[in-house]
Length: 241
Image (cartoon, rainbow, N blue to C red; front, side, top):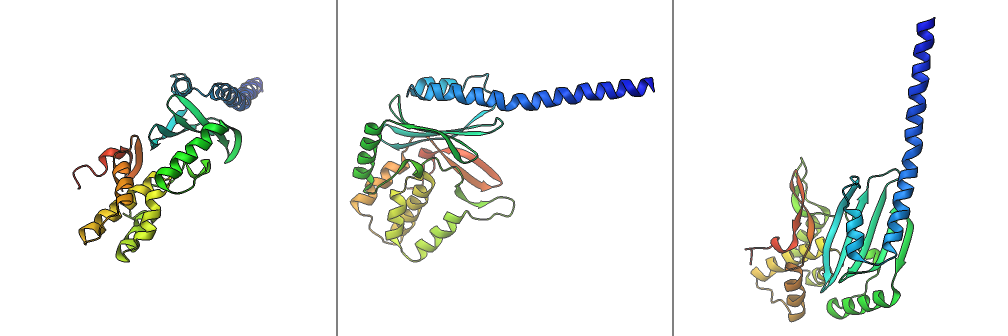
């Protein structure tokens, strides 16, 4: 009976410790989120990146980094805390002009420099000749590739691309070139390259967008068979002209 009492006591102590650890997790996540919000409110890219890549934040994973236009870039990070967070921001130079933090797909924080964001919209519209909004960015569920996964299935946009090429649908491919989604832009570039081989004459506007997209800085999410990776955008069409 004495040993049984000791075992129960030890079990109770361990259970109490587990509960304390579980209760402390949200507190850590909340502290992290509060600190991050304070940093984001300074609108400084260098300081924000330093905070997110600090070695003590082992549970932070970079997800997206890519050029949008000229000196404009989009970023997103994933915080594997409890609860988890998705951190997204747009920058120009060393200034963050738009930022948001999502938790369970709900916005926990959102802030923007209205004047700078409007100027960004204006520049994007002038170059791509289409309108955008912040939620058009930070998409991390699309891959550029073919025959992906163990079963070798083409991504949905690859399947759609084949249909567009077969139908010579340059109007829809043109919209893809204008898309804020880099993966979609790359599929469009590939589509126009294929159609050009068949005799299609690319317009000056289309060529301008294609030339820019092919040399964008940053990385794109790719898949090839069972290999999923991030690849430099500028290397996607290297040697394929």
